[in-house]
Length: 52
Image (cartoon, rainbow, N blue to C red; front, side, top):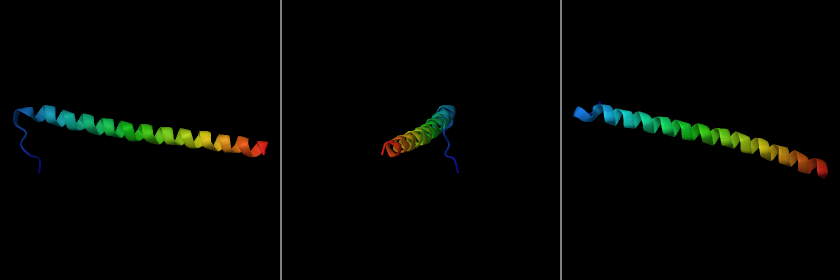
């Protein structure tokens, strides 16, 4: 299924691997920041609710 990459096989495959790694890091960072933002919003809403 894989095309013949010739003498550039290592470079092409490492570029694919790096791209997938960066994509996974971006997704992980997005999820982490989303959780932090959700926590901060819940804390702010609780403070606002207690003040009344």
